[in-house]
Image (cartoon, rainbow, N blue to C red; front, side):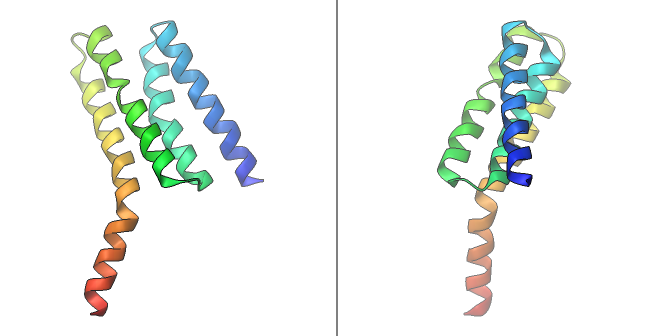
Length: 104
């Protein structure tokens, strides 16, 4: 059941981000492109696809550079959340390295 909910939310966030970019609605782009990778991560698919999706969504930051001119706070928050998405990608590898160093 949770898997189905995650798929529905993933599709919802992709639609929100895409329609937000099409209609130049900044909150839609922000929400859609920030939360779509999180839902994909929860589904447990291949980490390489998650990284690719995160990088594609992070490229959406150019939308904020073009359309938001003076609102740097939203751009900074968007970049911070995309860095958090990348951290979620690299965290399991770092945790394994720390565990291997502590057990040695």
